[in-house]
Image (cartoon, rainbow, N blue to C red; front, side, top):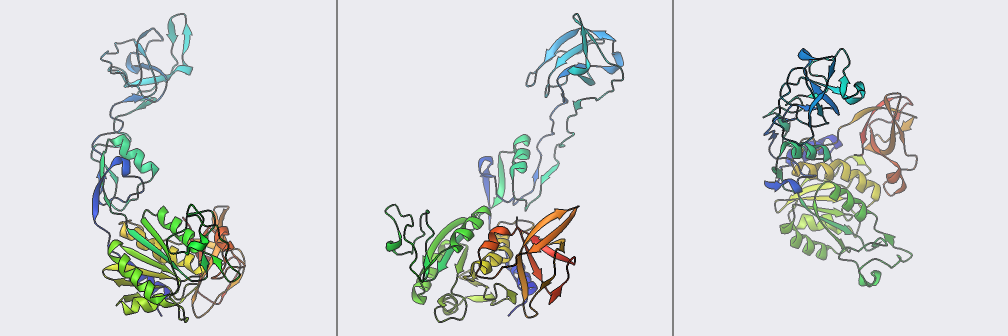
Amino acid sequence: MLSFDEAQRILKSEIQPLPSQTLPFAQAFGRVLAKALHSPTALPRFDNSAMDGFALCTQTLPPRARVAFEVAAGEVSTQVLQPHQVARIFTGARLPQGANCVVAQEHVRYEGEELVLPEGLRPGQHIRKAGEDIEEGQLLLSAGTRLGPGALAVLAASGIAHIEAFQQPRLALLSTGNELFPPLGAPAPPGYTQGTLGVEGGATGLPHEAGLFDSNSPMLASWAQSLGVHLYCEHLPDDKALVRRRLEALLPEVDVVVTVGGISVGRYDGVRQALTEMGCRFLIPKIAMKPGKPLCLGRLAQRYVLGLPGNPGAAFVGFFFFLAPLLRGLQGERQAFPQPIGARLCHAAKASVERLEIHCAHLEWLEGEAQVRLSPHFSSGAVLPLAWCNALVPLNKPHHEAGERIEAFRLE
């Protein structure tokens, strides 16, 4: 059984990004750059007005002036501002030749058709200079950057039509367990018995008195999709032979197989047995952490296989610390692994000495300092703390005092 830190090190050493592909701008959101982007142009491309007002030259500034001409945003004007002239100009409009200052319209007073200009105007006032935001050839975004809304704005403004991005991983998510029923109100993945399905394929049947709704599949599937994967979901019964057949069929079609449940040592835990019989090379057989001890990671047929425990709390922790970094790393994301922040514990806490205990916690900032409060009812089988928490906190010693500084991982 590996320590948590050793398991993280092994995972980090095993991840190799998928090949890259060229994508149009319209498909860039959420993708991870495989090549750095440099600006093909300066931004702004030309000196322009930051205000609605009047363009003038401070070196030939008259106390009074008439408007010689007008320049609107998007207008290509060839008119040159002569000495003692002013031009009406609007926000974003190109600064006319001969002007070196813009005075805001609210600072100008009209007397008849003449403008009375204020004193103290300076060259460059209210002017956005060409290249002051981005210089031509400047590095915009480094390889390994996941493109969010702000990055798309940079691409669009710079006139970048295509990017080179890493491929998105194909993920098969296989829940297991005879006791599971599909959640209500949503299409059920393949594998559930027809007796639990409605006419349109949605789940309508209630679990029998020994059954449970499958909470892991929607939790993990939505989380994985938020990280940018091509997802396939299926449910499998506790049947080792069937599990093996489905694994053999799916492995050639995906980059990662994630199983949920069936990896412990119980009589019906056939997933680990099936993987072993198929020749899976386990890189992480078990981890000394709580919850999530049975979690395993291996390579099979050049694919990644991750076994998550069936308890929701353990699956949640395993996803955050192991599956999420794997999916980010396959996409070449520069910061694939979660980074801790220092925080102060709001209350005393006890932890196991045998395994690293990971707790659901609520983190908030008070007077500029992160503070965390652990869930009082978190266990591997609990689901309510998962909705309440916004951080995970590992505790690495038997007793922690109130006010003690610890490390916390924000759920982002």
